[in-house]
Structure formats: structure tokens, C-alpha cells
Length: 130
Image (cartoon, rainbow, N blue to C red; front, side):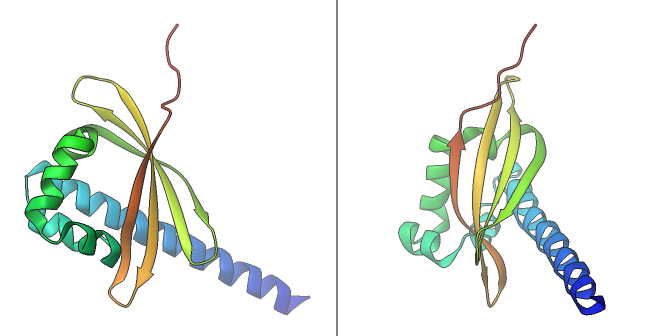
């Protein structure tokens, strides 16, 4: 029984560490976007994303056009994370510069260089109002 409890505590600690590392990567990429440092932002992309775009300039163009809420966010709030067996997802609520809410799901993969962003899906934003 003690081994089971120790394993559960260890697994919980690892999950929290992974969540913290994942949020750190997402936050660092968003910080780079805020100052138009697409070279740095590109380093947080997984190999599949880097291969798809080839250069930081093309990656930056895609982000500015397709994900303006990530490029120049107002506020960023981290919601739930989920371990799907080697692929983690992290939901993020972003308020853009116009005050509109956007919910995104980041797909994360662990590489030899640490956690990397393998994709971002725009989800339906939560309804707000009176």
C-alpha cells in the first residue's frame, strides 16, 4: 500500500512539473510574440511545425495572420492540462487587444530539448455576458 501511495504522489508531482514546464514554454513563446521576436518564438515550436514553415519569418507571418490573439494578447489565463499518453494538451484563455475572449488548445510534445508546441487549435470561446 505504501508503494502505491508513493507512486501516486510521484506521478502527481511529475504531472505538476510537466504542467509548469508546459505553461512556461507557452508563456515564453507568447512573450517573444509580444516583442515581434519570431526567431525566439520559433524555437518553442516542435520539429513538425518548424519543418512545416521552414523559417521563423514564415512562421511569424502565419501567427500574425492566423493567430493575432496570440501575437498581441491582452491577458493570458491557463486552464486545464491533460496528459494523453506522450501528448499533452493545455487549454489557454486569451483576451485580445479588443477585449474578446479566445480559447485555444495547445498540443505539446516532449523532445530531447524539452517541451515544444506541436500545434494550436482555436476552440469556441466561453460565453460571457449579463
